[in-house]
Length: 200
Image (cartoon, rainbow, N blue to C red; front, side, top):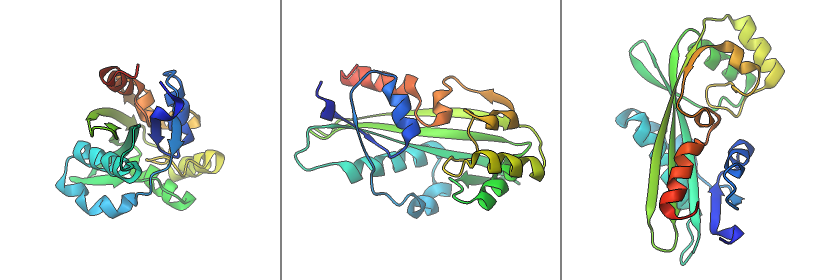
C-alpha cells in the first residue's frame, strides 16, 4: 500500500500516535469542519448518531473528486445526564471552562462515544464503527479540579481531562472494552475496519 493511500482526517497528535501502532502507513490532514455548528442536532439524535454525523462531515470535507484514497475520520462525543437532561461535553478551550466541566462531572457517570468512518474516495464505499466508554468520576472539590487544570491544561480534551496523566486520579471507575477509545481512536474497532477494507 502506498503511503498516501490512507489519510487520517484529524490534526490530533494523540490520534496520529495511536494510529501509528497499527503499522499502516498514513498521512494526516485536518478537515475544515465547524463542529459546533452541529450542536443544535445533538438532542434530536442519539450520541452514537451524532458522533457518526460529525465523522462523516469530516470525511466529506476531505473527499476529492476523482480521488483514490481511504479517508479515516473519527469524532468523540462526551455526554452525561444532569437533572434528567443529556448534556454535550466539548473540548473546554479555556481553563475556566475546563474546571467548570470537571465540576459538572464530579461524582457523575459520563460516556465517551466514538464514531469512526472509513471511506473510499474511489467508489464511495463507507465502513463505520461505534465505540462507547463509560466513566465514573469520584466526587472532588473545585480546588482539586483547579490544581489539575493548572498542572496539565487539558483544554483540548472532551471532558477536560486526560487519563494518560494525573487525570486518572479523578476517576472512581472506568468500564471499557478498549482504553484507546478514551484517548480518541479505538484501535480495536479501527483494526476491524481496516481488515474489512483489506488495508490490514
